[in-house]
Image 1: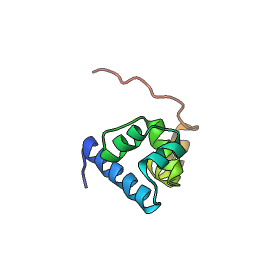
Image 2: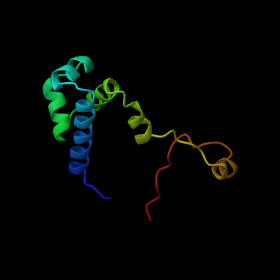
Image 3: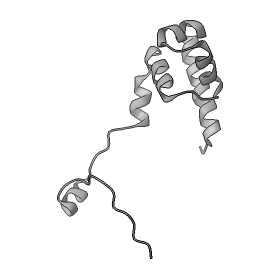
Image 4: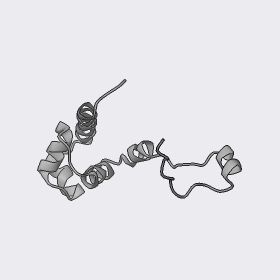
Length: 98
């Protein structure tokens, strides 16, 4: 399903709220445990955004670090790339303008 960035924020915020309620935590308690403000938790749950650091702290308190693993799986190098290049790329090359 395609979602724009606002829809993703609202969806993730709703998931955070559901997880918080399943653990019987108030927004205040979650905020204290995560070391963020209650306003930050409220904004995250409402899909209004917050810093990535705050999002990670809240996920850690809710024991949802696996979300982060799914968002950023380890980058791997394909065997074909190793064969063709000899070693993994370290940087990108500027594109030629035609």
